[in-house]
Length: 183
Image (cartoon, rainbow, N blue to C red; front, side, top):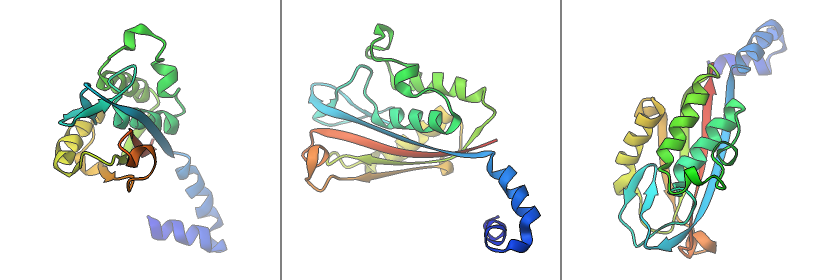
């Protein structure tokens, strides 16, 4: 497929193929999601719907799972749906302390109505501590279950803040996520 795209973009002789490619490309969309929460003592750390042993959890109206929140925003952004704050406002008491997996399930119900499917998701968790490597298999398995996709369509990377800013000083954990969808 990439050779075809390259040929169509570079070679003017493929004008009709380029038009065909354009109609194909309208069925592919990308969404970008981001979330950040402060760390606080006395609360569980939940990332990708997995509780990770750590001295601090994340402060938020829900369980503050930055991975699921960034993922929801990436999915809704790609599909043209309202973002996580619009769909599940932190001013609504029914979302106080809610498991973010419930928010993702509600998002996936709306997403299913769009006719798109998830091609892949790439996730970067920004945390000085804890190290995420031991938890990545469980995180990927849980995300695959929640999204209804194969684990091979998902990737999670952990990055530290190199002891710089709120993340590097362990005052916050953030997440970036990009999702590719197609009809």
